[in-house]
Image (cartoon, rainbow, N blue to C red; front, side, top):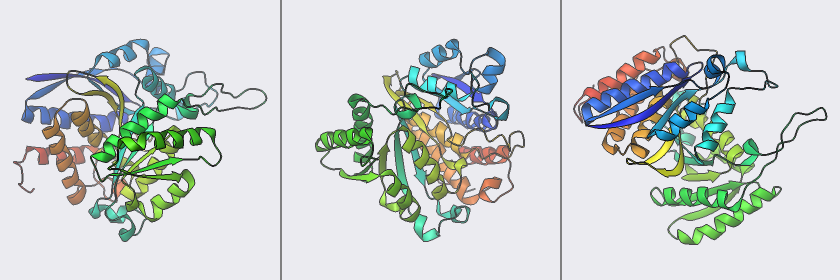
Length: 362
């Protein structure tokens, strides 16, 4: 039996609740598909600040670097929310991305027909949407220097090297080649020097992928089109800040932030696949933490991405994706999707689907 080492960073707020659901699904899949997961639990975010004095310890970063993959819940909460605090939970995310070389964030967005009522968009606008946002993750304003605030104000510097742009763009083209052969590169080239560099690099890489149609778009117009004609997009590639904003906006298409999974990938290969960190994009949601009502779909979807990208378990990933989709279509559903089910009830429904022979309906 193949065994995988996965670092388990439950984090803060609803993180432990949704990550437990994903873990249960992974363990159930392992029993069915002949693999096991050795979970290494560590603290991160606010929980790590309280226990260890840092948002993420050196030992935790080292453990992540030695693992096959990392599964992360969420970080942050009001008790650590002082914007001038020397130590903040979000520092853990930036350090993990930087130190582990996780430069590419993949965020798939799909409009499930049965969830049309959960989205404020008209059903005919969102119908058929199936897009992938590829966000550069280790450059841009989130990593720029210098920063503030100071007595006089604050500054955030947006910086990109040609290499940083080229590697994310090439990955996006590769992914588009395996989908519907359409790439939208999003920038702000009309006013930002980094945007003009971004556009230049895309034009340089594009001839390597003649089967992919390339479209340049400004971020502001892209934000509008996402809400009015989202089926126009296949793969969107963009820089760090724009990708963060656009992917949260795109959650409106799906119906809830609780539905969007993500994979953060680098170049490092393990014996099983590409090393990565996997997390739902919804954050710690402190307003509902402890109620048992958080939607585990994004965490479960992130586990499926981990199976596919980092663990080489394609059949198990397919089975988990199919089981999750079946539950999203038929229920039960958590309150963010108009239902009243608990986190545990949704996870149990997914595991029930996983236990059924292929093709047998519940």
